[in-house]
Image (tube, rainbow, N blue to C red; front, side):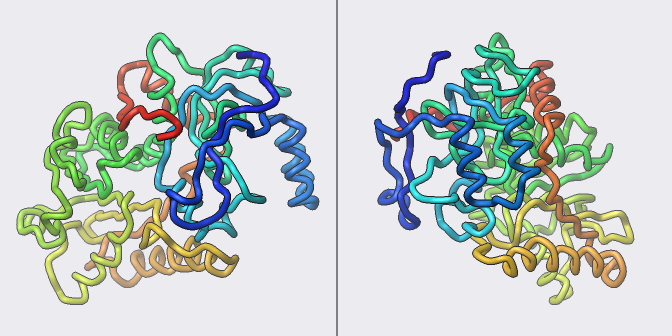
Length: 356
């Protein structure tokens, strides 16, 4: 394991389009090396010498044990976010959050050959669905394999934004989590309780899963069968905070306000909050600089200002958390420590073989 071969088995994306047509598993893909990674970056961005220098100091090679896939992987595969997250060239290896054994630690003094680590992606979810992968040591943490399996470690890396979001939950709050059945949501439900939320309701296509341990929500709603924004129960007992992991919650609140319908969340004047890490739609168009600025800066900034100055009596404050994936190890360290202490349990679908 600690002496990589020259060729490996890896998933390959050769073009954008239908996933069944563009993704294949090949047996003769070149194993990544640290120097290859830097040469590619120098060709693409010769001006970013500081970034390239940082990569030389932080990247390392691992023997992959497990990979966790998330909605971000689908967005990259679609090609709609290619300007923001697109690969430098085709074909490329998809997947970003993973667990593996260090075979080349590069210049790291914290990691050593043989360490089992969990790693999450930085700029884009790429390079993980292969027998060997290049990862950034700045967003890795060691895994205690006596307490956490490789599959669980990869899932925890993928769900690490939940740890950042949970810091915003206040004691005794009534919290609604949109997208509670997803990777981040499944772990945020657990952390919300730990942070002192008095009542947790989650939306998912599988509501029973949210009621069962370890998520243990107080209520769960199948959003394909019921529109929570029309719930009499929650119009009469509104939430303090909505955390949107699924897209589209804010436009629905605005639409209800326009029709003068009772809201399921308290207004800003009563401490109501709406927090999101998503855009309004799951497959947004980020194919140009101007699209990206509009989606991630101008629209959130406008909502942030309006919700605090002009709609305080009818809408909650709007907050878009774009810094939930800082390029530092502390979030991964907190995530793994919570799992080691039994306070956070990994929730996974699968596992499946790479060629499924």
